[in-house]
Length: 123
Image 1 (spheres, rainbow, N blue to C red):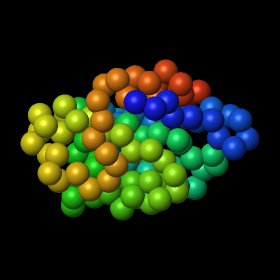
Image 2: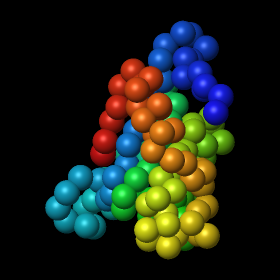
Image 3: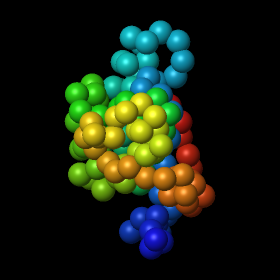
């Protein structure tokens, strides 16, 4: 596997966002959905944007066809964000065939990205 460079053009390390659920935070599901929508759209507006978005456990539900926020994730990917989706998690939930954004990856790749990230956020 080739080593990826997570340095921006200005020499800063990229930051990463880890999604472990399809909702933002814990508590009311409707509120978590509203907050996730706002969070993802805000990621499109901040500078610098995150270099990597990692989805594991129930977070993989954000990356599948017909997911409510998949268009925002596709837009982040078009702007250069690396979207890494846990392959074991996709298989566990029988969702690999429904992946709509990003690519399936393994734990080694996830740990590599996290180890190089300057900051790691988890909504």
